Length: 172
Image (cartoon, rainbow, N blue to C red; front, side):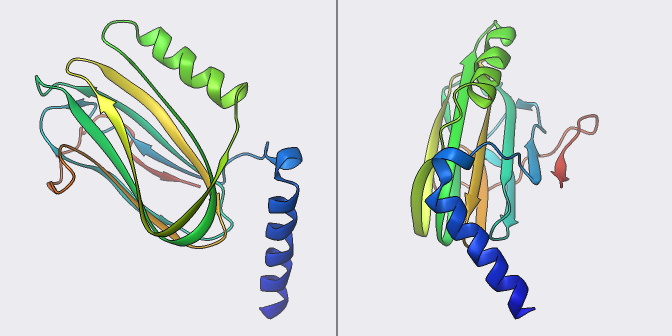
């Protein structure tokens, strides 16, 4: 067991030292935040926990059906050094543009940034009324990270009902 820990630690150090050359590996774990697709009120979208050294992708796909501009909040909690890359695209009527923007970023402009998460780190994404927002967070860290995402204000916590027809979950 100790040997495996040392090997993983060595791999992690090598990845961090040579990250600009090695950052093209794919996620091992994928979370989908796509239910409810039509967000009608403030509330939770998704939450989860990711272990150290687990490349992870959180994919978002939601339409703001609340009638007013909102924000999507994504909060990471823990103590870790992490590489994070993210993109969000939004459009009221051009869903192909949204998919194209996200696809370009994933396949052509992937450039993770190093973050030091000590406690909590909060990201905000504009979520305009009647707009579809699609995007992702890709991250890889040297420590366990918890994450949660919600629509509304920073302190609002209500679990939104999910769509029964859409894929939602954790794949890995």
